[in-house]
Length: 330
Image 1 (cartoon, one colour):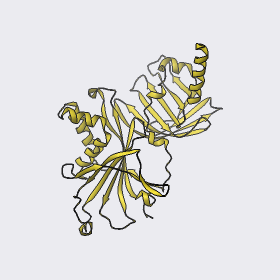
Image 2: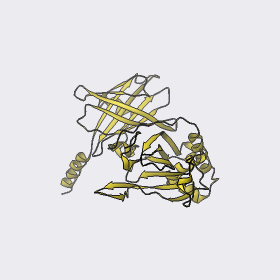
Image 3: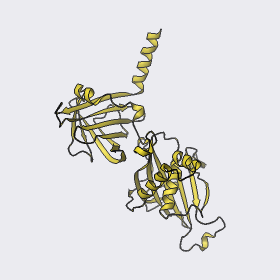
């Protein structure tokens, strides 16, 4: 009976996800020994993978890869998070191409000086580099498994400085315990609070003078407007509720919405920020930001733990209830 149960569990796990391992080593046993391996998992969401690049003479680099796709695809385009020397950053898109009936894989991306060619189930790689990461230990951004259905939205990298410095300052305040224990706990557990701190520190609004309320995301469904329970966040208003929008000729009164999709369970958190100025036209657009934050909470803050701003993109977006996407608005 126990044996039958074990077999059924193995069948269930194979249906839940499958995996492929590739690797290659060079100059084994020499000072110049180097190599790489990758473990690729396929599940009902898509693809997640972990690649380890090793060089006996230099620091190692870890690549966390994730995105849409399945076992039948001949090539994959995956987003990436790169980790090296205690730091994390957005590595952009990596392309994986399967060759020779999937017995080899070609991997190309920005961080690689040359494309890698790895062999399926390479024994030297597994022996030298060790057991690959388990699926539950691969850092992912769940938002990249979703397919966007709205109008095209053009975003670009936010180029102004300040956000990185502000985040480093916040991490230092937490490390040196210059904040209250309650504040430290709140910042550690709430990426939305981290985002509001960054925008306030960079002059977008004042936390101390703005009014605060819980954010509610309205969507149109089945012929009526409802609140989407998957989203949570904060709304800050730089002017009081008693201000007259008809007299705000210069658009100085802003409403800032900070929110995240709480149904996403990945380690990297997508924070969306809308900045609405006073506008009496139905076709108005607003400033829009996407921040991806990662809390390396498994490591002591003295050794690389704390919050990382993985990426920051911005642009102008139309109201989602009027089609979303970039202007011109509907």
